[in-house]
Image (cartoon, rainbow, N blue to C red; front, side):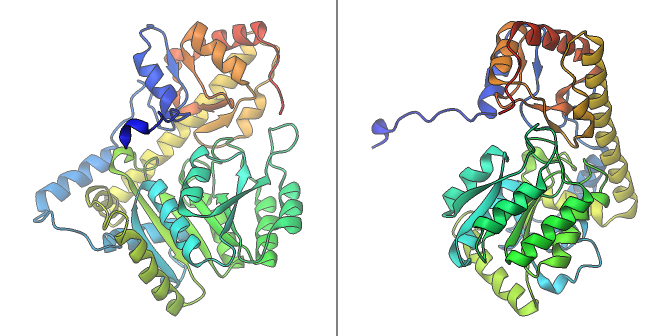
Length: 403
């Protein structure tokens, strides 16, 4: 059996990261994988996380299984974090999940089993794994336009026009709550209001990927789209990840939140979602959830954590501005100032696959062929090398395509 299996192609992001690790050149820069890096190029353990871990290790008395839905204190705390404390909890069925990816798969499985149309719309472009996850769950994936022709702003009018022509009642629509991946281009407040109105009118169900809370405009402000969509739509799904804002990448800590019309529907939805989990991984791991619950339920730790999230966001913003300034000073005739309007770890740079190939071959600088770059992978130490290399790359390679 196994000898007949063909070798699968490497993941477009993780495959490049593997190449980077094997690259022996002294000067090299990795702007591919979506992990936060500090000024030393490390992915740090937050001080609030270390403090919470110390308290947990000192007090825990069992390594017994969690329930299928996960750690109750965690589910309550992260639901309030993502939806706001004023949202009626009796309408929400929350399950702890193995990261944001696990939350998306739970949502996809439940939708495939019980949704009216079994279709989900994703933006063009979107996170590469969205389509794979939803397809594996059994959903038909459709695409809606997202970017304007210049590829540096969101064209929500085109999004709405397309959905009004092609969407059906009961279709799901995958939305990025903030820090759109891969572009870093978020709708404005007015655009979110228009989109929410249209989705409500079309009776679609928002599936909101909330992976970067705190990295856009701050922890409470990044809830704007979520709060507005929930005020307009009686049903929705929020898939949250705490890899980035808690730095818990390897702990795989996320949550799937099903927002229902009433308490009875929430109870029924939770029961069905638990069946999905039981037949998949049975129940989630404890450690990451225990850390998050400890922090969010401790006033001092929570304040410390909020400060650390603010510091991470500030560093990303500083790197973005430094890169734009560095490219301007490099003599490059391409204007990168549009990046300053983007938010979060990722940016659509306007670079092409030919630029990506040149940078990898000639400078050991790794970016995706789509032109997506992880701004958090930049540092003061590597900025001059990055900007001078990119200026040379643009001089040597034809101007990037806008398609």
